Length: 510
Image (tube, rainbow, N blue to C red):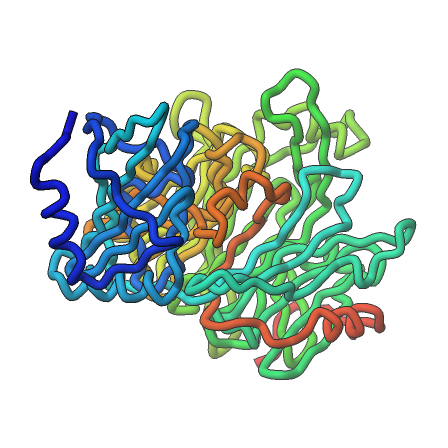
């Protein structure tokens, strides 16, 4: 037992420090030390966090009569009971103390009482990086059910505190039998005043917001497969590249992956916002092109494509695809782009994933780091919709050396999927199902100068148990420099109107 005679003296020595408490808890004076780190939820043991992140709240993840925990850094400490829920003011002073101390470390001590006996877990540290993260995050919230799929919202959350609001609520335009779906919000260079998202079915169309002006575009055209689906906004031009897809899904009864989403057709198109012109830029009959992404210099477009030769004896393309769904694998390609002429060059192979590993792999969702050095992507055994694949992991390619590696320091035994970079290139955010295998939550990780990532940490919430009680998935996390200021009703009024038709051209005007 650690019944130290100096315990009371040690505690008195802390009184001159800047001390913040919740309900004035005190640290136990008698306890047993245990050689194990505390089981807490969320797991913030040993993580690295941005200097501007909201307070990291947590709770003990095992039964205990009481819990007391302390954050300390430099001459500042925070003590809380039951749940670690520091105030924003106290947290910011703790962050400042950690950075000014020279160590950039916050030490965390957790004490638990069971049957009147206190134990003290091994302390752990949280590293505070001076690298900040973009202050806002947007995401689509969707229930894991196909009965209520219309109950969708696009939300935004301030990462510097816990404030959250709705960007658009799909139910503002839904009418049961005349339902619709919204998807794939995207921004130009993290700018919340330059965004787009797409609505399908009733009131379908693409919403474009640009510096205070809103318009709805009807991108359907006889010369393209469908309206735009997965977007990639050019870094500075009023130009968006989309994949255009015929997407279906099947429900599987014996596979661990219960749903298989697939494209029976998919191409790439480019859309000019000012002229409302649209053109095909990749539409090979034996390729399924999808998931475009720009390099930060705006001169290279990355995308994914699977080679698929149709069986002429099978008339239904849906049946044809599903008969071979687990053998369809996507590679990553790029195309050069000349901003002065709006001309795209021929495709070039970047990563041939279908020949990797035993039996091949499928690589999706390329995202290029802001300095152009790295390509972050997801990879699984097969398919185009990795959020439903439990074997999906994050990988990264060094575009200078062409070396690729699985991000073992980031991945979990479950699904890692949608991901994006911070504007300064120091952080990534991605969707993960590591908590329970069912719900996707946003996780963040810091990248160092050698291309290695810190242990990921979960989006902080005011109540640490919030995500365990919240029965929706976070989908497509996108970082932003600020909040979207258009109201949900602004978007609803726009969607209820007619969309401006596009003009198909063989080459965009310049």
